[in-house]
Length: 578
Image 1 (cartoon, rainbow, N blue to C red):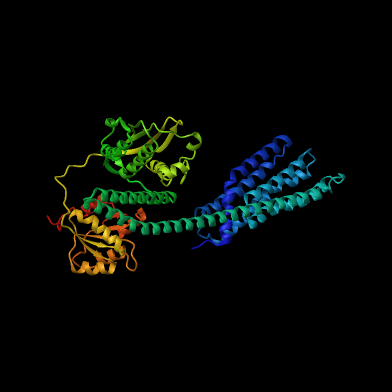
Image 2 (tube, rainbow, N blue to C red):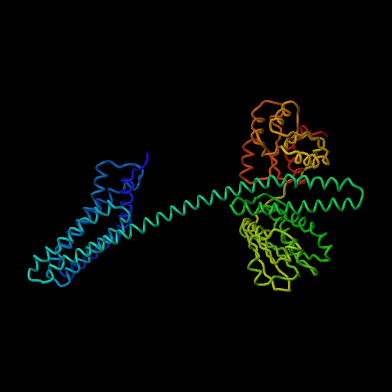
């Protein structure tokens, strides 16, 4: 049951007064001690006792309301809760009247201060709650209006007795203005919060629209890139002429550059919206690092650079972390070091130390290149920023590699830092945290996927042909389908060992086709389905998994990744030809 507006105001007022309870108790005790000690007002303890009883009643009454603010209290409790601010204010403010009538020096001043302080406390405690403010302020206003009458009766010959009317009215007016000002400020704050919430919602919608746009562009670009890479690889392996191989390699290099740029843009987009995640799975750390370094040895040899490696033997072999993201960061750093070093040496130093149950890894990559000026150091981790136009013309790139590398390092529990002296090279220090892991048990041999019958489902003919070209060297028999509907027809008539299913297709998409396949009773009901998608975010993969898919690969298709995915889903080998 919803909470009505008056009930909600009442609960908020009760909560504010409860928070102010200790201040009221302290004020009551202080006033009682002062009046008893300095003017021997013995009956002040009766006043304090009455006020304490009223506070106790208020505490008991509000307890149930604050414990269950969404439940409307009994009518008697609700009326008592509404009346208690008036009652406590009437008891507290009553003390001002005998002070105004007192002949003790400064006693009337103390009475005025008591009422003024009580009014200000009411305004602050009940700010924005008009009914509670009126109820609690009412007795104090009445006492202020009665003060001149009491003072005149006690001091008929005092010339300033009538002037108390002006003081009382001015105080009431001032408190009223203060209350209106405070309410206006609170309303402005509430409006600002509402505006900020609206802007946040609009920003989230804009980010969602941007993510959808990036996913769409990614899907459209990965189709031709897949064809370029697959065709270039096939051409390079088949043509005998050296000149033709050079041309094929040129096409492959251009396609690889396009893929790298696209991957950078997608990674940056995911990091920007907080959708990037890192894994925590066992991997061979030494093998991963050695593989990354081995990849760059031809480039080092081409430029005549030496590679110096230190501390590799001190590293643990098996750890738990994200090998893919570690290789990505390491490749970015090595690429930059080689790119900006014309002669000398690239030094890679490894260090590992225990940090509780985890390992703290430090990888330092130092070069003997041109270095980075202090002005450029501050721009180094700025998205889309290149150090100069010469860098763009000579080396290309998106200006995102280091930005992405630092964010990935932070996701892996570390960071990426840089130091450099212009003309003396640069040093990048990567830190990350990995968990402990045990080496997996050795298995005899590995499964062969040669002769497997795979259905390739994609609405784009270029994609279908590209995947077919990738599958042929593996000895896989590929059948092509251009839609989800055609795929279901083929799956109902012929037995397949696996299905490569494009996720985003017009009409029936890949997830819907997989759900229908799993719900049916055909010969391929349990056949493994590998999702092929350009938008391989964790959210997308969760949706694929929920639809009944078994694995996923990203576009443009990487032959090694595709081989790995097919090997994983065909480990059973019951349908794979020997």
